[in-house]
Image (cartoon, rainbow, N blue to C red; front, top):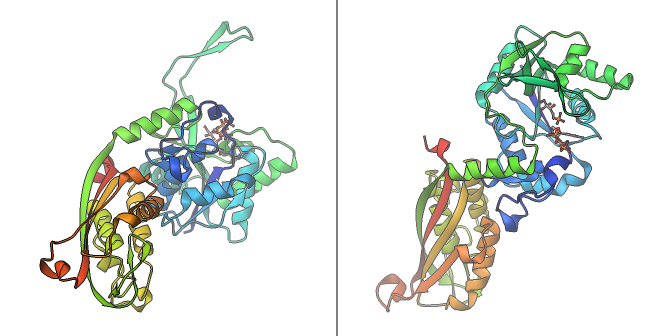
Length: 406
Ligand SMILES: Nc1ccn([C@@H]2O[C@H](COP(=O)(O)OP(=O)(O)OP(=O)(O)O)[C@@H](O)[C@H]2O)c(=O)n1
Ligand SMILES: C[C@](O)(CO)[C@H](O)COP(=O)(O)O
């Protein structure tokens, strides 16, 4: 059975726009634009929503609907993430209803059996809720996640004076995901559009209007919709306080051979020799890659990029570092700082420090003052002292969500 997730992310987030938080990731630009691109706990609202479906074993594909102006924001938000199920985006319309229909039409050519429609603005949907909505579709053509109303409800007149207390028994607050058999929901959406009925605020309402029976699945209270700037601030604060620090260390050494330059920290430095290696032999980036992998307990550089694989012959080590950063981000982690010591008699590292800090900072999304680069000679002792090669040590501080620590 093919189960697609359709994530609508084409809204403008006007209610969140005033005083919007950047979520603190500054230099990457994460946090700019509408609320779904705001960073909470180091990842955008949208990538968290995508990730929840990407990790779910029953979801086979994910289609995201974005605004025509948001291509760059979307690319930046999803860059480096291993979302293998992610299909090319669809472009949304002027209302949520229109955006959903465009997403459904984009799926129609290779129609899935079932579609789960979800707001990008709900980043904390749980795997359990996704499973429960899918399970409810075994008996019914439609099912939505919802919460029973727990507050007493009042109706007011135009002057904000209470006219009635509304009985809350049997009342639910609609959430997403809302799941449907694909054929009936696209037919219902098309019919509503044909009749110019364009004020539905969720898809279950369209299903109800079309006469489909809709099941309710009780959701968890954590599946909030980010609506205001305050929601973004609160969610960011909660995610950040729930992060747990981890450290990792890395070490690498390469011997000299004939040549006229070395690669160190991603910077090409003229020298009397070059460093021998399968890749570009950049000991600094190799040690740093291992430090990041170590911090999340995800093997080492040799495991992910075996020297026996001809694909990595002469490779720029930046690729290895980018892969380690992607792995850290996939755990929901953020990098706090890194620190590197180069052990070399020559060349001198000092003049190249700013370039290395900038390059590493760019890959790790860190300002230069969080990228320590230091160097020492070995006082003419040992293999480094005899100028037989260069070594590097690195350490990394990474913050990962406490959930991942369990
Ligand atoms: N034209 C639209 C409007 C909304 N949405 C999406 O529908 C979800 C729920 O909408 P809402 O929370 O109301 O988001 P916005 O419309 O962006 O918010 P606002 O009303 O404050 O502008 C969001 O993921 C939003 O991106 C969409 O895809 N296309
Ligand atoms: C679909 C929805 O999330 C159900 O609660 C909600 O209606 C969408 O948000 P909006 O503010 O109504 O557009």
